[in-house]
Structures are given as C-alpha cells and as structure tokens.
Image 1: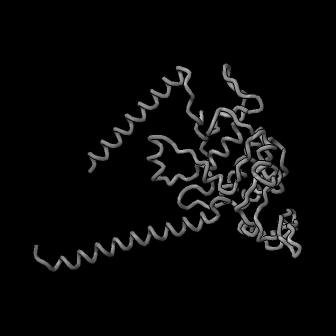
Image 2: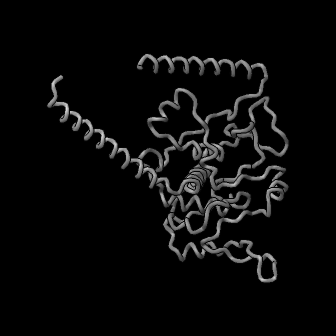
Image 3: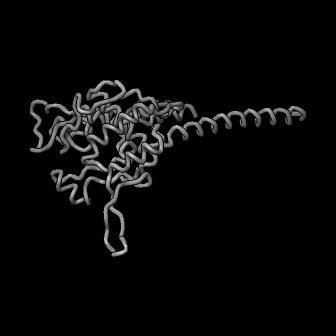
Length: 284
C-alpha cells in the first residue's frame, strides 16, 4: 500500500513538473497565459482551521464596507437581514438597518406592484432592476451576486500544496482570492496591454484585467472601533464578511465535525477492547 501511494505521488509530481514546463514553454511562445497570473495571497483568518471562529468585530466592519462601497454594484439576494443578529446586533438594530432599504412587494388589491421599507425577513435587495440593467451600467459586465462569492471563487492550489491542505483543512481559498483581488490592482508590466476600460490585476481568475475599477482605498470607510482605515484592513474585513455570508453556520459545522471525530475515536477504542476481550478466551 505504501509503495502504491508513493508511486501515485511520484507520478503526480512528474505530471505537475511536466505541466509547469509545458506552460512555461507555451507562454514563452506567446500563448495565452494561465490565470490567475499570481496565486492568491495566504491570509491568517480567525475562522481558519478545525477550531476557527468568526471575529464578530471584523464581520461588523466588513458589513460596513459592503453597505457603503460594494452594495452600489453587487447584490446579496440570498442573505436575509435577520441573519445579521449572528454578527452581534440586536433585533431592534437589525430592524432599523433593514428599514434603510426599499424592496418591491405586491401585487396589492389593485394588482399593482409597490415598494416598501424592508423588514428583517427580507433579503438584501439588488441595486439594479435586472441582470441586463446591471450589465448596461457596468460596461457590459454585470457585477456578480456576493451571497456565495466566497465559496464560489476559491482557487485550487496545485501540487504539492493541495496534499497538505487535506490535513490542515484549508477552506479559505475564497476569502484569500477576494482579498488578493481587492489589494492586487497595479500598473501593467512593460509590454502588457489591457483593453480600454479595464484594469490590470494579476490575481483575477479569468483574465489579466477586469472591468471593475479599484473599489477601495485608504480612509474610504470610517470605522468606529479604532481599526486601521487602510485598503489592507478593508479588504480583510469585507472578505471575512463575505465568507460568513456564504457559510454562516461554519462554527457549528466545525463543532459538530469535532464531536463526530471524538465519537469515532472512542467507538474505535471500544470495538478494539471488545474484540480483545472476546478473543482472549479463545485458543488460537
């Protein structure tokens, strides 16, 4: 069995090296490069690992960044306002927060749709009436919904890193990618041209440039808890918030998983002791 595993790992390493050489050769010949050009930066998140937990203060700051910056273009149609109580807000605070938004409802008795102030049971509304309107307002590229963005945008790490990720339970590829993208805008290197209206970002997963301009900058959002008002902090906070939006039950899942593992260990020990006790009285 050990020889089989070693053989598989050796073949994977050879294949990985071969692909890397082939990719380098293709890029040297002017072929389309592999995206993202740079792998996402690894951030030390509070919710990482088997015992990780969300930092509620960071999530509240991330919500502030989303509502003041990201919500102008990006929706979160799958996130209801009532779930914000998990961030440490009271029911009254959530109700007041929801009332800042207007949602479409109806039809009424006359068969007409109408708008009203949102209530905690409503979801974050989209800033655009429909997908076509969103695309028309953003140079033909509709901004993606952010409800599940942190789970949908994870970048798979290559060999041999993904082997270690199995044991470390690395599941932060989405937040790492979002953080890297938000902080990765830069001038294109010499010889690289980007289309008009796009912005070079080597961390973008689909191309060398994207239509979204750098959305964040230093001192753009005012924090009330004394946290640094920097691009780096904004990117970390909103990335953590989007991870929570995509997986609000992460802490519960990890607690359940830990208890299941403890149960399996105890159950295995009891089975071993039972077997040993039964077969100890039999002649071999």
